[in-house]
Image (cartoon, rainbow, N blue to C red; front, side, top):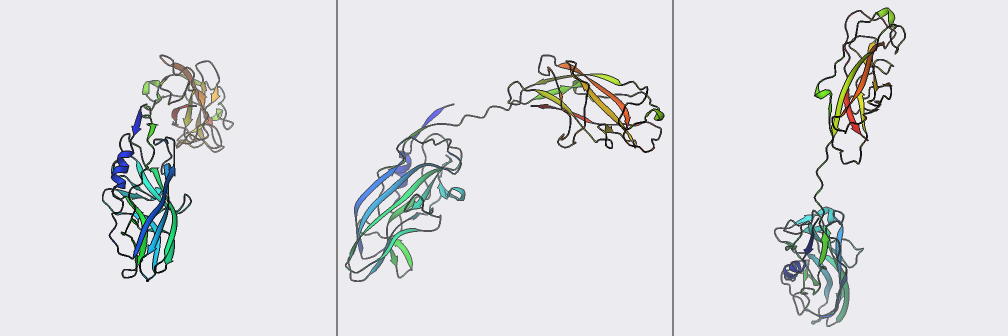
Length: 365
């Protein structure tokens, strides 16, 4: 994990130097800036771990502007801010912000008048204190707007870079000939760069995610588990779901072993069976009507036998999970599988061979 110093001063120098780049406009209004303050975050924010599209830092620009109409004709005036079109950056709708040209995961958002006001869209002016200024009259306009620094991606340590679409703000007038609001370029109405920018911040870059500790298990050396059952007399398959009369259960030793933890501490391994159930029984269905195969398990520590009820073939839902003891020890361990045929329905059983198939899977708890 590394710590890196972000240097927003470079941003402000390039960004704010572009203020006032709006087209020149003529109006009989002059301006005098009476008061200008900047407030906002005083401590170093966490640039790296702020939620996506969330606000990293905020600056509030408050001002009092004296606006004077120098002719006898009334003027419509306002204070306003907007984005100035430029290449290289782009609008991030989820954050209501313009992303920096460099891929550093940061963007700027504008709010008019207050922290609860609406965001300035990518296409519109945000006007405040709109009013009519009578001829030869003077008015003091008090206004504020908010600039938010937002995280819109993975933050890259280092300089911020510059915006392709910076914002402008200042006094505006309604141009009757074009029916548009335009920035006043007269006598201090178009403001320069604020002196204060976002605070420098030392943040902790998000660490590189650890490699996935995959669980790898081997059952029966990777080969299919095959069991050949002795012949059974149909007459001895009397009750549904029970061991035929005089029939010997078949046992097979099953060696297994696992490595990896899947990111868990001391995982408990289990094994489960998936397949189609035979009728209403807990046995695997076979390819012969009314016949299935019951599967039981005894753990390497002698626990059981436990009937391995087959679960769904898609997600093993409903399957019995049998403890896979000592799976992580060197050399693995050995469990016992028991199988035998059972009747799965009350209908007729035709003579002949049959086959039942299931799938075993290991889980970590």
